[in-house]
Image (cartoon, rainbow, N blue to C red; front, side, top):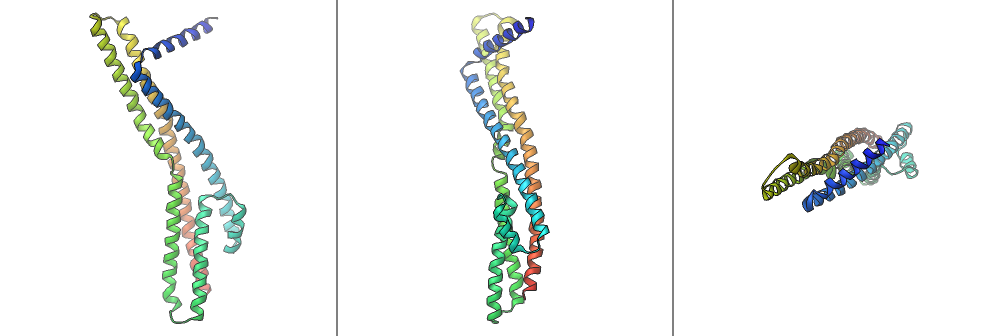
Length: 242
């Protein structure tokens, strides 16, 4: 019974506090609520997406290392869920097909030395892979900027609401001509609500940003390692075709 009465009393105090924060405080709280909803939506989406990408990348790498035929790997990728590392491989494989076509043409027409073209082909292949890596890394970092902005701006918004609320509370005291703890305390406590709201938004955003950024960097490094391995395999493949 006492617990119920205490809960009802706490709820009443919260409603009373919220009623005292004023128009500016309400605008800031609604803004922070919007930030918080978007932050949690991004967290849930990115965690799910990165797990999906990680799982797909493992399947692809197992397939790639178990199969020495790049054509068979490319054909098998059709049945796999499209993830960044697969898209990097596909862009590289299509470039390899173009190189093979050029190589066949040069074998027919010996006007240009194949050895001369070899370094140019590998350079072009590396450029295609690098472009694909950059594009996929940028896609992985999508939405992280909002988490960074929220983690840094939400506390400042909360502080702005608190400063405004404290200023309003003291202005009200000055207008009344007298002061006491009972007069000042409600206004100050109401002003602190926006700071709490700012921290409640910023803390999850900061934790999620650092965690997701770390996972993104790991995935990017894995793609870079694969790109180096793939380039070596293509170099050997083209050499054998001479």
